[in-house]
Length: 191
Image (cartoon, rainbow, N blue to C red; front, side):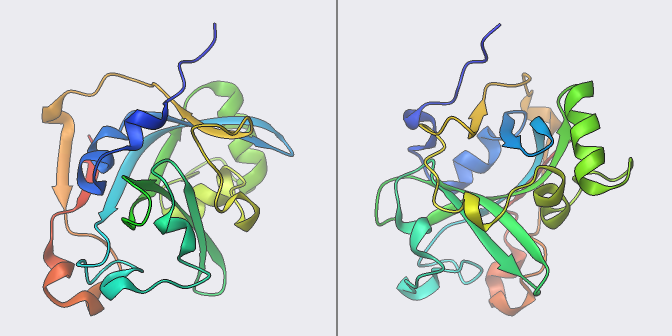
């Protein structure tokens, strides 16, 4: 059975709405070890030029952040702490630099679990953090600036139904420098 891919319209909203909407959706990536599918279970919204936690706060536009300025549904993969990649999905219109960090995912099936285990080299805590997720799903800088609405090797599909009462909001992680924005409840977890 063919999975229903998320089309462009799905991404054409602000990052707060997209962060909630992505919970339960399935991230699909073709890797050297095979196709892997992860059910998204935690996200964080970054609202662009007015968000002190965002890489584009104040209109900052660099080679690194350029994908955030692209059409909703573009991948933004960046390197952090000199050792990890982090994967984001852009939201909204061109030149409105909002994105959603995908923090966690669970294997969508046993085949995906096996691929994640091979890629991570372990069988527990496969993708329970943004860096671990990128390792377990083999998301690298080569996957930066990919149109997730069009690409054949990297995309999102419909997933599981998510009831509103299963979504918990909390503070974003690792942005203590962002003053009052560090306290915004813009991290969403599927319980």
